Length: 212
Ligand code: MD3
Ligand code: FE
Image (cartoon, rainbow, N blue to C red; front, side, top):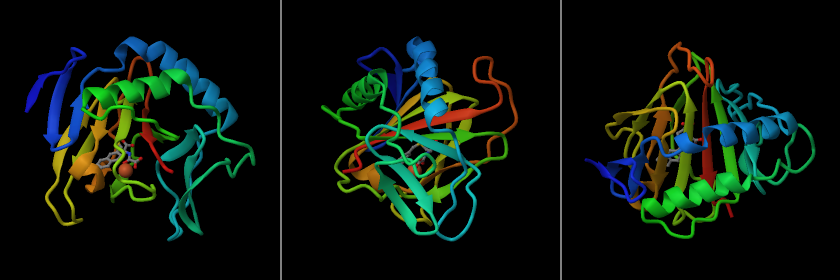
């Protein structure tokens, strides 16, 4: 179903508790990217390794009080960047404010994120079907920002074998997941080659969570 949200953006209802806000970030593109550069100067994108020993094709970094990490010991949230030994870069006020506003448009008021995972996809990179379950409290929604090349997002169900529905996520889109859809399986299909006038040949996804 598609309608207009209170913020004036096109709103696509994927399922109960899950919506796409088309173009929500477009007004803030410049400032979002200026902040991203500051973050990646302090904590660079890196390819983490899964507990099973696979190097992820998606490069990652984080900002905010906590960051999601994976290595041979497992998946977890860490207050420090294992590469630098320092705290993750501060979460920009613009980021937490936009995530909070987007959550409110979707009906989740007072969303306070303490973790922002930043994913970088280049053509060929993908994120296989998974659930997000490393957070303490699943009643908080998740908010994600898409920038750069478009990607096909597969939205599944409660089980790995549930059918998936594909959605195109484009530069400026925000997705909010909460309620029943919070634990649904999801993934990003292999990024296709392309050029984005502002972002070049990459897709950046910022995912805001309440980890603790
Ligand atoms: C759907 N990231 O970082 S958006 C992830 O575009 C992740 O990089 C994808 O999946 C990306 O874990 C997809 C984020 C997302 C996060 C949580 C979800 C989508 C979700 C929870 C339920 C359903
Ligand atoms: Fe995920």
